[in-house]
Each structure stands twice: as structure tokens, then as C-alpha cells.
Image (cartoon, rainbow, N blue to C red; front, side):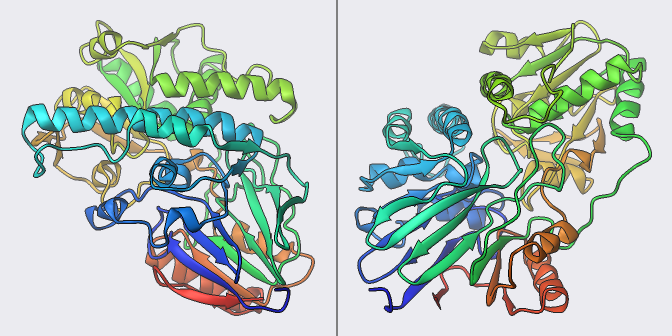
Length: 459
């Protein structure tokens, strides 16, 4: 088999920034890297309901780069429909992915129930994509592996996980199938993460699959960190409003709380109450604190969050009270693109009031409520009704822990030798095309933006 051809198929993450799924297959083995949900525009979300392109029971191995839904969120369906092998990932990814999948399953069940009771679904009855029971079955298949260790998969196949510096536990995957050596970047972090240890240099590989979330953008370094965020908080508090921060529960909420801690400590904002309204974010924060003990965080990060006025909204009743708070405050709630979760209820109640402010804290995929708010929508639809947007909308892109275009190119340049081919994925079409052009010009190797479902030979 060592000389047999090996195929790489882009089952997802091609033409869009979500739904990452990459299949490596030889004559006798199939390895799936990532198994993510499609998010954003309806045309992509509908693909979550399609049958998996290959029978799940024919896949031998699954490896996960990190815990975000667009990389892990389809695992419960894959296992429910027949996948019976291990799902390998780092320890940090396993801890966070279990939280993410349980939360996602709960939301799937809850949203289906709300749609049934509200009557706004076209399906009768509306069903969840997967259930909590499906998620638990997937979690039972988790197998943790350390960074920088070759894991023998049998059949002349192996994998190695290399620190990616994007979120806790995130990794790039070096996969060997027969004679092929393929490096899948996963989501790459910036050269320096605010709280995590930095990403590692990439290993040698003839074929590279690289993300392009920020493939056409550069991060700006302002004179004062998060100045726009701090200014927005001060303005909103003065007019007696609420600052609502849609934030991903994993990594983003932790970074937002860390930044707010710094703002309060340095006197940039008053010490108003800060509410974390996301059970998943609270669970993830505990994982991050344990990771500090385990050496995953940067030195000096023992006090990741230091907010004396920090409060947890754990129950639905506590969450609902935040829709009409008695005093100015800051509410941090998932999800980061305002596409689901408790933040949707807060938006419904807070957007019509001009005193309030919504601070967007990172990438907003096309078609999400977050992108609509960023682009100046005057109304947004939620729960079957349109809601007027009168609240102030502020964007703080400094929280992004995605490598920008130059940092992506630099990662390729750090490889021991230039790859023979680079496939640019996990980005909007314009971002992927722009990064491919830079790779051709600056790295000097072929760079292709594959189509969804495209299959290529690798060696």
C-alpha cells in the first residue's frame, strides 16, 4: 500500500468558513480530520441535514483539531449514523468539546421544541439535528493524545498533533496515510495568544491544508488595547444602558473577561456588575483555570479573571432577569455570532432601546445576525419576528485569535521546506482567493482553493 495513491476529499470547509471536514483515504483506510457543523447562511446550514458523503461506518479514524462547533459539531450525527471508532484529540480539546457538544445538543432540542410551540417551522413536527443522547455517545468515543507524539493508527497510518495556539488544546494535524504526508492547519492562532502558550512551528509535509478565515485581512494594533470597547462601556453606563457582548463560550468569553478585568484594574471603565449568561462559558472558564495549573496558559496567567463584580446567570430565570436589569451592567452571553443561545433573547429585548449597546467581539460569518448588525441592519429577525435595531453597535476585532493573512503566510514559511501543494480552505471565497495568491507569490508553491466535494490525489 505504500506506493498506492492516497486521496484527499474536501467534504466541508470549502467555499465557506464553516463545516470543516477533510477525508484522507487509501485502498484500505479512511481518516477524517474534523467533523464540523455548517453555520451562517441558510444554503450552508441546510447541508447539515444531508447524508454524510461516505458511509460513517466505513471511516476508520477521526481526529479533531479543536473544540469549535464548525470543527466538531457534526460528530454526534456521525456516531449516531454508524461511526464506531475513536475520536482523537488533545486533552484540552476533549474537555472543551464535551461542553460544546452537550450545549449544542441542548440547543438543538430546545430550538426544535420552541419552533413546535411557536409554529414558525416549515416541518411538522420540527426535529433536532441531534439529541443530548447522541452527543453523549460521541463523547464516549473521545481518546486524548498529547502534543508532538506520533500515534500509530495501524495500516501504515499515523498522526501527530502540533500546538496551533488558537484556543485551548487546538492543534494542527500531521497525518501519514501510506506514503502521503498531509498537514492540516486547523484554525491557527496569532503569533502570540493573549493567554495561551504560542503556536508551534509546523512540521514538514508535502501537502498542506490551510485555513483562510482572515486570508484577506491584517490585524491592526491600536495604541491602546480595546479602546473602542472601553469607550462604548463608558458611554452606555452614562446613559443608563446595558452593554451586551455576544461572545463564544469557549476562549472568547475568557478573553473578554480578562480584558474587562484589565479595564477595571486600570480605571478605564467603572466597576459595574458583569454577568456571564452562559452555562457553557462558565464550564469552559473552569477548564481554562485548570489548564493554567497544567501549564497550557502563558506564565503569569494565574489570575485570568479578576472581577469583584462578576456574577453568573446559571438558570433560565436568572437569564431572563437580565432582559430588564435594575442598573447599568455588562452582559456576556453566547453565541458570538448571535446565531443562537441565550444572547438571542437578550437581543430581542435590548436592541430596541437606544440606551443599550451591543459589542461584537470577533469574526461574523455572512448570514449570521452578528454580520447583519455589523453591516448596519435596521431590523433583524429572531423567533419568527423582526426586531428594530436602535441600540448602538460597536465592533472590537482585537479579540480575534485567528492568524491574519501575514501570520498565515509566515506559518508556511516556517516549515522546514516548502510544501509541494497548498489547499486553501475554511474561508469566505474572497479571503481564500486572496490568501492563495499571496502563497503563490511569497512562498513559491502551488496554492489552490478547492471546491466543496472536490477530490485530489496526494503523495
